[in-house]
Length: 99
Figure 1 (cartoon, rainbow, N blue to C red):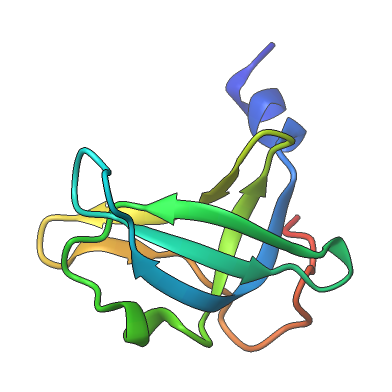
Figure 2: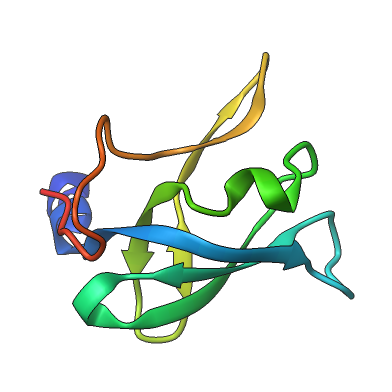
């Protein structure tokens, strides 16, 4: 299977951060997020974002990988800005599929 096939096999959706709290007991500084995926319900996931304050993330839309076992929030590791969350260019319906 090619890497294009691997990417197309992922289910990506947009969700809105409802809650963000520090993740106690994590190996590295990270946040535990509650994300609203519209008709797909609410899910929890973690992100390693040492520079982000939890309150700064609440209300933001983010791009997520929907996996049966966990929710992965996507971002870019920037030398200048650290971990930058991927998000849509403009507001869309929560739960919208990326494609």
